[in-house]
Amino acid sequence: MKVLVIGGGGREHALVWKIAQSPLVKQVWCTPGNAGTATCGDNLPISAEDIDALLDFVNREDVDLTIVGPEAPLVMGIVDRFEKAGRKIFGPSAEAAQIEGSKAFCKSILDGAGASSAAYQLFTDPDEAKAYIREQGAPIVVKADGLAAGKGAIVCATISEAENAVDDILVERRFGSAGDRLIVEECLVGEEASFLVLSDGEHVLALASSQDHKPVGDGDTGPNTGGMGAYSPAPVVTPDLHERIIKQIIEPTVREMARRGHPYKGVLYAGLMIENGVPKVLEYNARFGDPECQPLLFRMKSDIVPLLLASIDGTLDQHQIEWDERPAVCVVMASGGYPDAYEKGKEISGLESALPDTLVFHAGTKLEEGRVVTSGGRVLGVTARAADIPATIDLAYEAVRLIGFNGANFRTDIGKKALKWLGD
Image (cartoon, rainbow, N blue to C red; front, side, top):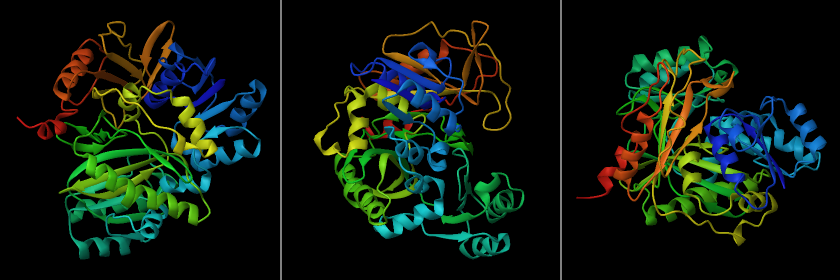
């Protein structure tokens, strides 16, 4: 098979790395890719959102399977375009991808599915939104309705912060057209977890549990990012809770999507808040998480390609996934200043200093005159696996210390939330 992976982040490096190991695959391309994807596939200079150019390439090279990494091309309708052209592509249709592309749509699906989530109201008028905030009190969450690269949800500790967030989104247009509408939402408390499944429109196949770390600073402080690290499995998701999430949240959501005439095919990613063993949905994403994809695929022993094909063909009920029992931890090394302004072009050292059972997934990197340099906010996802969570955390940070670039920033507490579940 010939396979194309669309995107250029850490998630896409993990996908290319995993897909290239499949005995079914003889050629992997990644577009636009990064310095890491170039080590296990061939990069193409095509934007992930240039659907015309991507389809031209797939037709010209007779590509057998395309996998869409980021959310933007999904919401733009790349799957619909490829399927109309008779091309096999992994991901949801434009209508189904609205489960991530519009928080209002997502809430409507959750309501229809009877799945628990935060109480909310939708607004286009800033004064009405502020009046509602004053009525509800703080803490409270303000979210841009559309895609905002993982940064559109603002958790506000005070009414003043929430009113400022409303102005940022609806008046100052911080997120552009993604902020044409906003949601003001109840602030859920508890411990977050990421729960990803493959769906073929009818059947679902759960991946291992994981946990992201969204805020930029230790102890979940500072602004939200695309994710500063992740680990798998997440012990907050017990076996009993795993089944409840499938039966009470995931399967009803997939049924509701099908009932509305938009069968969901691809990865469905539920961001959950868990309090006293009760899960509630914070959001849905329409693709693999980044950085959750990195520890998940590092643990996945099964060939991923038959699973992707089964999601497209409607045969997921015929498959299971085998996992490495060892946990995996991914620590993101970011550019100084991220998620705000940051400089690019910093040379990265120590990438050749690999430790056993570690792998460095590239995100914001590129090759420049034979050197690997920074080209994005999240630069690397240093990923490790070991016998248990404490050993895995230690190994991941040992690997981080071998790598350097000017202004490198990373959290020092990735995976620490899992420790309280391990007992004495």
